[in-house]
Length: 180
Image (cartoon, rainbow, N blue to C red; front, side):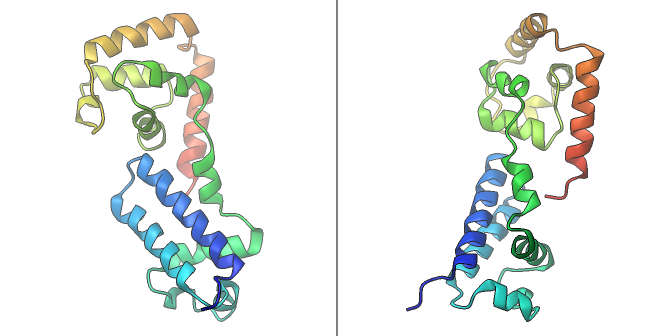
């Protein structure tokens, strides 16, 4: 049996990483499964994926549609996949600090930030006050205790300034413009 060509291993590894990051953000499970399935199919190929791409036959591979085909071609052209790079971007420190708030896990904070565009303490406070946070799977805590902790954190960090809100809004618009 031949070993898997290097491009195939690299793309499969990236697709698996994308799947794991999407899963941790509670993305659509079908999308997560699509990346995993594509990674398996690519790794099983004995032919280098670059050769398949040069024949414009990527979509002939089981589990590879137009979107994943475009990502493979992007990797072959540039050596990276922008959607993966965007997912790898760590949470801002101010947002990462929310994991210390009662009832908020790291995966829940990542979900709130990346999927719901909750980027400031003010956004988080409004979400809790609307009682919508209790509908998000993974929230395990008292809304009242969380609101008290948010108020205390806001007092300590002075995050409510319009400058921070503008920066967060700019980041949200930038993130929304990405196609992951």
